Image (cartoon, rainbow, N blue to C red):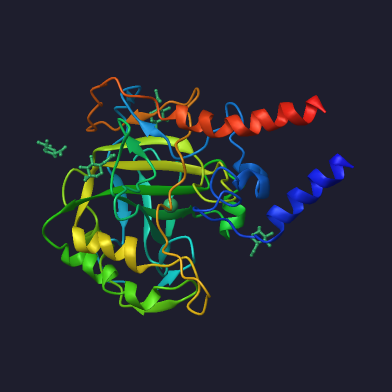
Length: 316
Ligand SMILES: *[C@@H]1O[C@H](CO)[C@@H](O)[C@H](O)[C@H]1NC(C)=O
Ligand SMILES: *[C@@H]1O[C@H](CO)[C@@H](O)[C@H](O)[C@H]1NC(C)=O
Ligand SMILES: *[C@@H]1O[C@H](CO)[C@@H](O)[C@H](O)[C@H]1NC(C)=O
Ligand SMILES: *[C@@H]1O[C@H](CO)[C@@H](O)[C@H](O)[C@H]1NC(C)=O
Ligand SMILES: [Zn+2]
């Protein structure tokens, strides 16, 4: 009877959400594993994001990546979409990344963003436990795969280029091409067209040979361990108002929803590196190694209720 009640409770609490979220306990990143088993952070599994710290090895063979087609204006049009979890810019064909130790050529498919709230930073990766205001992910798929579903079954099926975004007083005119469009995709499901521009304009002008490399996962369900991560050391700079357009003008709910919810803090928690090697590129700076509180303790705190519940149930 107690078991039936417990099971019923589980179905009731998960039944109303086939989707994941960032802001409610029944569907937030700590609960993703209940709906998407591959999001369970089991021991020795290789999840993302991670904290980048001084436990890093230089790899002299990691030079600059080759960004093909990033410096020209692609034909056709691109699409910006609010999918309820992020703002995604879907680019057409014509761009690819290779080199820099990547095992193959990867076609660029989209880029999207992670951000915080009015008073919180929202990058996914952290550097010496510091969270940047935002993070941009340029997602590329290994050219041998016909679609993303197939790529997710390959441990190096995707190559994601991660860029930290920091804040200064001046607007970033190139970033403005995206932030100006945000009002057209304020609500979940909305899309708008955007004229292609050289993607290189969005990226840092200098120091692109300075990056970190590790093997990890998608940071959204199904959290597939299929990603070669490249995290650039030097951030992209935007203005406070461009940042605020993300944290205050984008909603995770549809336009006609009874209650509108701003989309904020859409980042997954930090995961342990376990035995993974995190490499600095040939030109990358090795981090100094200030003694910082391991963010992992945050994870174990959140796991505690589950462990307690587990012992409670087995105690029955
Ligand atoms: C350095 O990077 C290359 C290219 O990714 C890789 O083949 C090699 O195993 C790496 N070396 C070390 C020591 O990690
Ligand atoms: C948030 O970002 C700002 C701007 O880069 C930085 O000054 C601050 O230290 C960051 N806060 C945290 C908690 O990482
Ligand atoms: C993706 O590609 C695989 C392998 O060719 C194929 O079996 C599958 O049907 C494709 N899936 C979609 C959604 O197109
Ligand atoms: C960028 O690269 C230049 C030249 O290699 C170097 O002097 C400078 O310190 C780098 N900047 C950062 C922020 O790493
Ligand atoms: Zn992402």
